[in-house]
Length: 326
View (cartoon, rainbow, N blue to C red):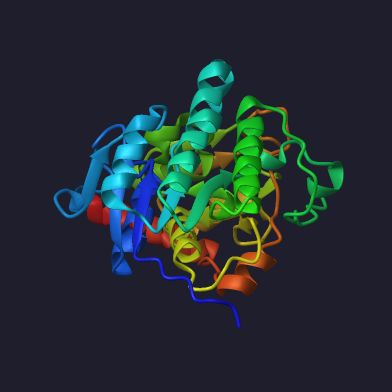
């Protein structure tokens, strides 16, 4: 019988980001003591958390600040989410590596030094990079965690490097480690924080605002999607799991191929006033690399009994949340 793992205190880097706030909510709802770590104490995405969480202003590129925070709070687990986004990483590769690799090493080292039991990292579909043709249009063969990564952009390489560091620290007995590779995440605040790459969120936010949204191409491209609240729940579920982890990599998505045209139709069914026009073709982001995959999510489903809500339910939740927040 596997030994029980008790996790009662969790520190989260990048906690005030568009995905981090959902991790905070997920952990708080489960009665966990949390420490939110971020370089800015910005509650615009989660005003209800102001005054209701422990916050420490920490720059993850400064190891002494992490050491002090972990020494004071003594977390059982760490959820690492702080990162520089793809566009910024590509335009400034040094900064991309500094934040996504070296700062990650700082987080892992502080976790090792302070007896953290488990480290869970928010990774990305970008780690897979430019996959072979059978994983893209039109077949979309499901990508498994054992499939070979083919990183292209700076961000892709940084995610693979950070994952590898965590895997090897776990192999050395420093702590348990898991990296969650997320499908395309949509949710409130992503357009404002993540910009043009947030097509799935922009479609919804434009419809809510009664504004038209048009793309010249991309309607035939399929992708795998997950609502931000479910992404946050996945990180919380893995961090708090009461048994030793069986794997170090987990795909997290719906495991369904949904074309952007069908995604837009789903938005239209929930927001009838949506004014959306998506042209035919592929690569709506214009990346020139096929970052559009469907995930095999067997691992996380079987090990943690975790399945995200359906696309329809996720978009409806996005709309309800946004309407409540005005």
